[in-house]
Length: 149
Image (tube, rainbow, N blue to C red):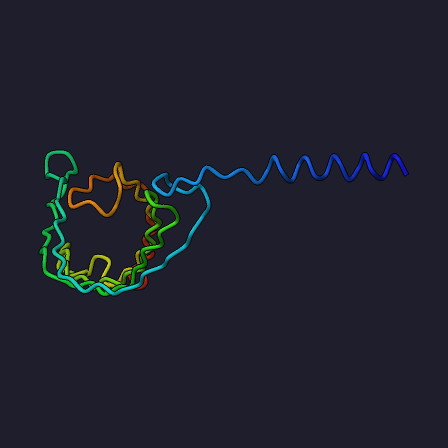
């Protein structure tokens, strides 16, 4: 009987110690609150491929590169994890028209690509302000769908 009262007493102390409240609304919450926003992107693209080969170094005539315009189409998300931390996933498909000409043959350079991006954004001050400096970092994976191999 004394043992069960002791266990009940220990459990009640841990509950009271865990449920502390500061009654402060202005402080940023440490709990994760996910508020996703989604959208799409459409944009122009221009390839800027450079040819660094020369006849002196390579011992052959350099290839000629024709840079051209292309376009991108994608979807993105803005997942607010906390007041100052946001995840930004993005998936895009890009269509490029850049060609390279070598030995009287024309090749397309990455005509269709899939890009997968996952970036994190950290705001230095609150998001609701007009001036909102931030820093982004993350990774990108590019998958070539069609190539001339």
